[in-house]
Image 1: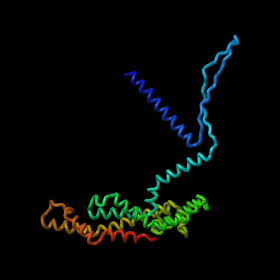
Image 2: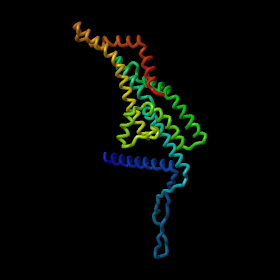
Image 3: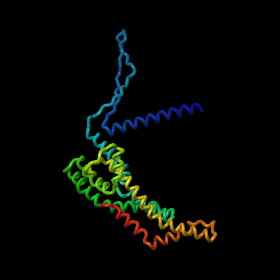
Image 4: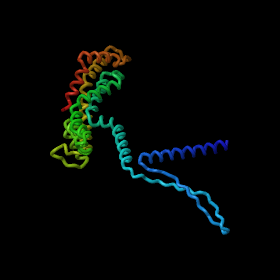
Length: 278
């Protein structure tokens, strides 16, 4: 048993060494660094004139080849991967996706169906409605920022500013003044005559507050007719003495019938899209 434990410890040490060495080698490959081990032999002279070679000594050194292109390429890859990882957050924070998805979830909860329509359909519908609403903004970004940058007529800094301005203009159009003033008070900033001069974090935070408020107000309005149906069904069952029968079992078919007769999806989606100021 002791021999097995010792062998297991040795194997673990070897595995850790290999993992660390692999990570160092990978890091050096990304940054253009060269690692090499140099060996030398030390000789000692005896009094009789004979020489004897001592054990070789090994030196470990790290040098860089000065290749800035490899380092710049690695940094660009890291930046691209970071943008890809943050793309869902950017989509949620800077577009109409948040309001649409929250309203659709309120609609499903008001009807009382737990999984109809499922989350995948709600998210997909919200995504395509977002693309439809944000189409003019994305076209402006492509025309003013992406295409000139690919042609080399503008720099990266200019493309970033020209790409952010349409999104900032869209968010400011949907943002309530009180939310913007609240963020300015928290950040201890003064009001500007031109709202486009505000920094992007201020605009995004104000936009999200306004989007959440608008989504919950719309959700409350959607809940009212279905709440009336629940109250009518519940009072009817109580008057008939059916205390043990859940009111939701009886009210759900009436909710679905009301929603279908009123063409609910058309009313909600069309009026929801009209709430955005383009």
